[in-house]
Image 1 (tube, helix red, strand yellow):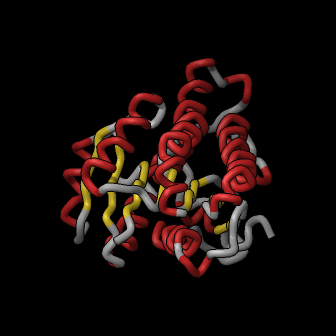
Image 2: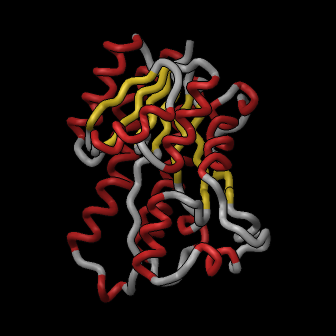
Image 3: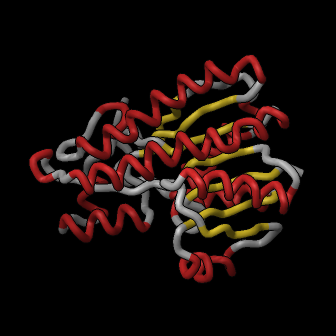
Amino acid sequence: MKTAIITGGTSGIGLATAKIFLAQKYNCVLVGRNAAKFEKVKSELDGNFKYISADVAKISDCARIVYETLKLFGGVDILVNSAGIYTEGAISQVTEKDFDEIFNTNVKGTFFMSRAVVHEIIKRRGCIVSVASDAGIKGNYFCALYAASKGAVVAFTKSLALELASFQVRVNCVAPADILTPLTLNQLKNSGETVEDLAKLYPMGRIGKPEEVAAAINFLASSAASFITGAILTIDGGLTA
């Protein structure tokens, strides 16, 4: 039975991924900073899952997540780096605190969570799938800080894929555009825009659903993608076409 660690697993894309994995009888470790959020969603989950309260921006927490997972399930086959935070605004408005918060979670968390699990992943010839963004590929208006962090995830994915290929470990990432998650809804609340406003920007006339991104993550984590590594899979309704 496969075991997956999913950071940011209590909402949005991470939660949707956990549901797909659990339906396939995987063991799932959901990682989040807010235990109350997990309590609200755990009734939606069915299968063998555990919650670990941790902050991936802390290197010690990354190590603890892996240690506790090994105690629970004996190994790790899949890491999904889904923990992430978002901000937007002109570069002149970005503070050092803003920079540190975004990079600590989106980049440092992805990097050191991957480092913490890499030896266990090698043992199982498993895989790592990270969540980047269309912003990390093409850049978004008034979004330089977030785009820089997700661009780092893209570059990290490609580099780590080369480093681990000889171990038969695959490293890929998905690059979703706007997805109907709590993060996006909060973004809209702050900007005064609506979901319908966003939808007009997309060739397919709508924004994405967490389940659509989760399905792509599931594919990249599966044997069906056994010859895919270093890939950046866009999930954006044609936005970057």
